[in-house]
Length: 474
Ligand code: ARG
Image 1 (cartoon, rainbow, N blue to C red):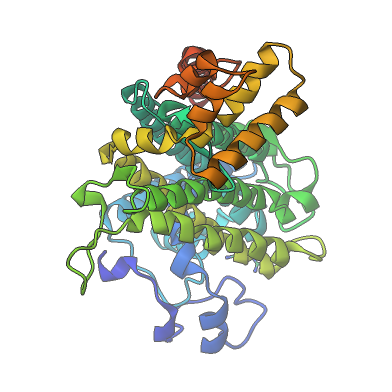
Image 2 (cartoon, rainbow, N blue to C red):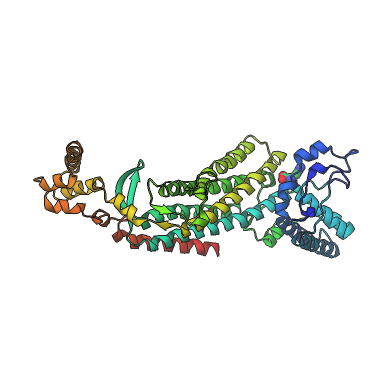
């Protein structure tokens, strides 16, 4: 970025006038500006501030609060400011404490006396809430799209996996075999809920706060519905105090993002395990793994580790804002400026994590032989033997105890479990046949279960659910 696009307040020199210069005889201290200015991060809202300011000016024209000629001058100046941002040529001055101040200052430079009327019946309090809601609407929707892209990768890898199976785990101990496609789609379902949650948050925040003023509205004959419609918000605020002080939507966005991040962290942990020599279930493409500076043999799953690690800051961003909001009296307090950095950070981190994991998983290869060998371990068949007895009339508790005893005898006497099953009067050769490789996973056929018979229905349901989410996004 050119220097003009990187506002920095540590260079002092309070050249131009501040918004509140009428009431004050002295310019703000450098220490105040250094501590309280938000331009270093809220510059990101420039597009949304211009949209909010344009709608506000048009509303002032439509209601007759401002003459058309002033509105035209303001809107033309806002367009010029927009092109300056697009071109990277917008020049900040030291008194630009935030993006809203900077844009209004520049509009006034361009439009002269008409520019000085832009802030009529408006406060930075409703202005900043408006810009942040516009930003949140767009960005949370974009993250929902990215989440759908990862779901798509998981779904496609699940299709590729065919009838490959691996051990399913409980307590990280091998429990029962599951199809690899079933395992991959389990994560897809969690992400489906995340998309749903992000879109719910977007629907709830779709309210225009513009026209609430500083806190109490205005004596001028404005029409907040007019600016609401121009901005494409679904609803208009009902209470001016609430409109300027509500940051629930940021907290909710941060929660939805943290939840995505938690899901990515759980996937990340599995990929870390799967790509170890101990598991050996998967290997990463060279492009999505890192080497060691000292150990030449190493190939590390850094994307997966950071997917796990970054969950910490996502939860921190959420709890940080909740703590800032706690106990704040109505209405606007400067504390609320602390909403932006955590929100921007969580969006950036989750977006990058979604992209990186999607690519890593798309390019990874599965070692389905290693998965099969691990899943065909005889102990994984124990439940099927008990269920085989249940199907022949034995109460489950009794069957469980009987098979448990066989497992214990197998371990104590170093006898294969299959031999004990074959020799048992209640079991025999038919039950022993369940130990044949690949049989156990075939038998997981109940609704939503891990075997191939249930897999097709689940895949279809996932695709229907995703199609409905895509329709909501359109
Ligand atoms: N940069 C401020 C924020 O993000 C703008 C609002 C300042 N309002 C005020 N009354 N000081 O919250």
